[in-house]
Image (cartoon, rainbow, N blue to C red; front, side, top):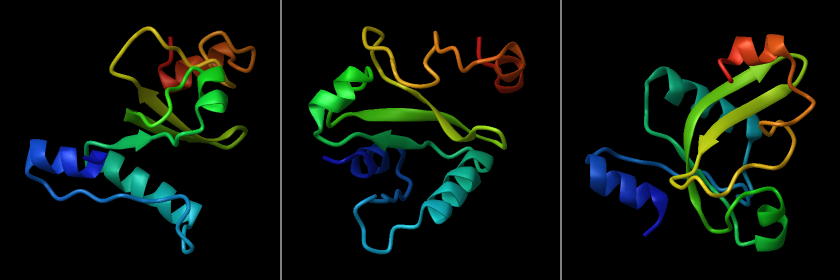
Length: 114
């Protein structure tokens, strides 16, 4: 089962899926849908592809679903997702990871990231 099917089975609510490979994919429309979903307090997820080497180097699992906890748009940085895995042993190692030098105290405070 794919994430939308599982969520629909668990919640009884309709679910949708957006593919980055779709010919008509529009990043701005996706971001607006995420923003609207956040405002509506929808359950949202994201998933990874099967590119295991690249993903694992960043602390992500291939072919895995993550909960989208929040979304942020910061003028000086851009768009960010706060995601969570159902396990604790793998931790994001890419840009904006917990130990990244990109974080400032002001940004942590603004985003509620401790």
